[in-house]
Amino acid sequence: MTTKGTTGRVVRVEKETWDAYAEACAAKGLSRAADLRVYINREIAAHKRRLREASSD
Image (tube, rainbow, N blue to C red; front, side, top):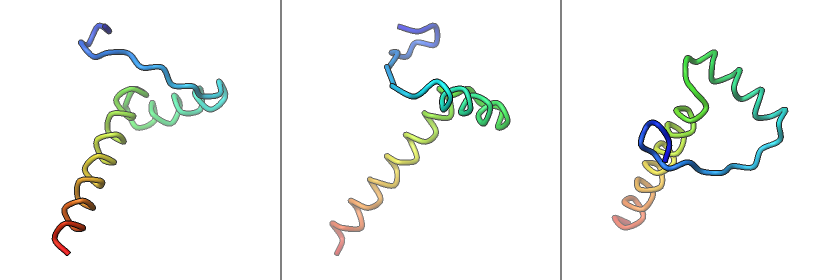
């Protein structure tokens, strides 16, 4: 358990990529974890939207 109450996950990413990602996220004012949560939630919403559209055809 992390300090924010969420379960930690392991993601394998090259160090160079992870470090560059930290810079990109910092420029947006987000932590890498927060940015990943935004991305994941966006992907889930898009998936659900596609499922709804497919079921209404």
